[in-house]
Image (cartoon, rainbow, N blue to C red):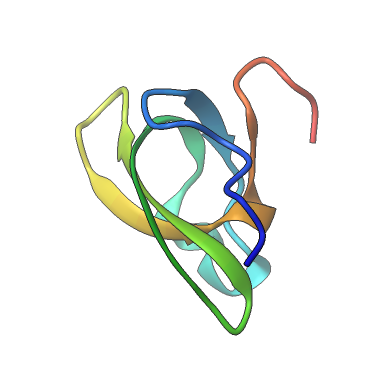
Amino acid sequence: MTPHKFNVGARVQYKPPLAHQATGGGEFVVERHLPPDGEGNQYRIESRSDGHRRVVHEINLVRAGSVF
């Protein structure tokens, strides 16, 4: 099992996959690590702007302030 790249509490930028572009990206905070599925590590993240929570794959995250 590959360790999670982002720690709980880390600020991250979420870029949704093409199929989910309507959900919007933006800056989020990692709330918890979730077990990996067939696509890799997963996280529960919370939006810093509106409080919405999402479950996302690690491949769709970068550290806040980084460029995709």
